[in-house]
Length: 477
Ligand code: GLN
Image (tube, rainbow, N blue to C red; front, side, top):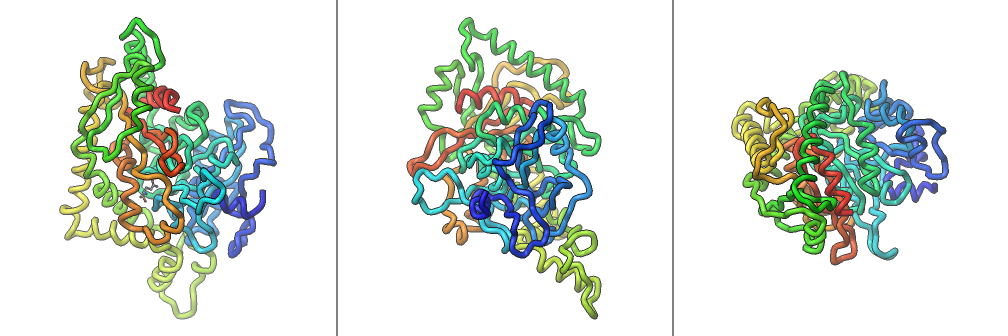
């Protein structure tokens, strides 16, 4: 693959201008070593914040441009064990902070969205922060890709690029070896061109891991399996007619500013689903709560980058007469981009003694209320709730929620250079609620917008109910 092509799909070019270390990149002409396993010979790209010892893991940041991780992330190890070939690492917004893959160090160009309806269209954003992974999948340079999703970074790029993107239930996929942005929200997700492929990769990486104390235990997974099995049996017996969505109840949140296409809803009803409007009153407060909590956690996590363990070789070097504090200030000033600095400042402010109660605790409270909204909505009880003893479901409530993934199609890249800050944050309005609640959510392509660019819809389920999410996803695609 030519370097220019690689740049357009978001792969780190091997000949990076200022970077001395060779990056691996996706090359469809190079088949992986032949192995056996569930993913034998499949080529999978990984986002640049997921550690893989075969290449540097820079989080698309100057701060980590020389960072070679000492171990490989559990999710990548599981892919390798299943016979997959790691095709390369993909560009992202620095440390995962952004929605357009435009918050990049100067030595990377922005990722171009390959889903252009005509060859002469001006370039559009591939979404972010996993824009490189989504673009690589959409372009066909890899079979599937891993991304990370803290507040929508797998689903938004999937929607913009016309591919499928899953954010699993929080805790099903190990975060060991994934560079932390906001621990209570970070999830490793999967992007691919169809739901079956996403499911195959998810089944490999969804695994208990003692190296991540937030990763679900085998016993919790067994509980999930039996609840799902019994629910599927109930759905099948709910009607004498068997169609793919027999008995399934889908809720459309009334607070969503836009609805899924009517033709899609009619199709799902034809397949046996019943569709009803539901209300999640706190969903509209999710965006400010998310940005407070994510920034607060980020400010704490990013405290470790100060020229001691981490920092580029040049930056870490102690200069004549420089004190430790001065060096730390210089390393952080030079090593972090503008957006990352903004988040650190906002997060530090939210955690400061004067603001803590008024900002951070309020956001935590909103998160709790939103979680409760979701739990009131689902008919399947939360599998890990202490009160969920048996397998019984409520008689009212829905199985899944459905709404558009994004409030617009992919923005123009020229516009994204100016449209940053609040307007960029608004793009996450429909993705952050499921993140705050830790629920599985998957964006599936649902046709094109009036401008000819892809539109995605999101399916959200109860914690652990990926099986149901995939079922509806398959009916949509
Ligand atoms: N756009 C959101 C943010 O900047 C979400 C990013 C993500 O999911 N990594 O925080």
